[in-house]
Image (cartoon, rainbow, N blue to C red):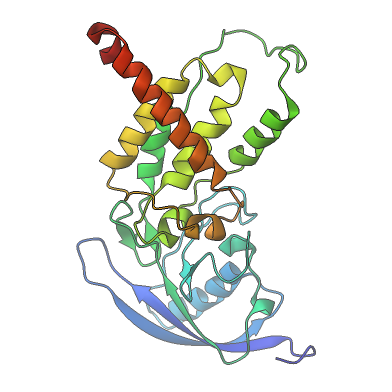
Length: 265
């Protein structure tokens, strides 16, 4: 595409599926005069306006803030979760990154734990249930303490913040050959466990969240790194190493306790 070209003509090969119990198929839609300044989701809006004008069913896809911070959007573009750009959500992906005349294949996140609701929309509530299993801390009620009351080493604070940037979009699951959510789970375990406020439940948290991960039907982690490569926030595989360390420590601690106490843990 030349630098002077302002519009694209594309073919969109999109997965259409009425629901999880229905069979899905790819359908191809030509779309013309797409501005290179448009975001990918704005291009999808343009397609849906055309489909509605033709009395056809618009393509369902998740979106909310469209600023790359809420984790609501996400689907696979040409085999890559969120598309071809690193550390970019699909809502922040712009059409200037695609060639005129290209055929783009759009699919939902593929995972047993993410049943298809419709078209490109999947049910990601399994991630919410992992959070509910251990994503909390015990603190005294009352007004917020002064920011400098509790000293936290800067390396710990930085690592906690890096892991807290996880938006829970599910790209790590979609990119993993085992459909594992371990990068997501480890980011939540790590960012709370590194801070003093989160260490009270540290053992309980990692045991419960990993157990819920498995209950939801996510696969095992084999540390191929596909999750890190697909993560729009660049969460490191080091988080999984942190989780494995905390999990082993919690398991050993639980085994060393009397049965009445270990049942509580």
